[in-house]
Image 1 (cartoon, rainbow, N blue to C red):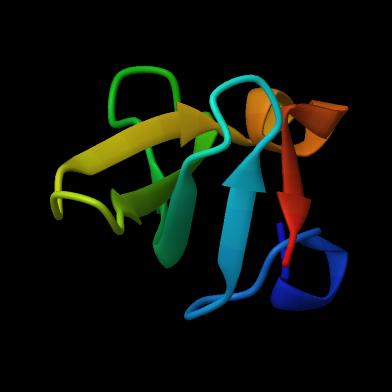
Image 2 (cartoon, rainbow, N blue to C red):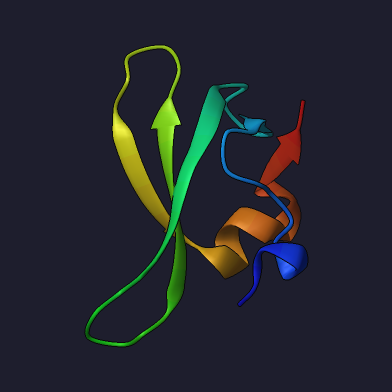
Length: 65
């Protein structure tokens, strides 16, 4: 996956549609065992770091702000 095909870019703030929480996209990564692409992102409310598969991040659960 190249940067041009990603819906969200590093540093971008996104909003979770269900919870209303705001998150900053930190990195793009791969799961070692499967080589699946993932987003690494940070909750702005408490700086918790999360990882989510690209398919879930880009299925309209999150929207750009």
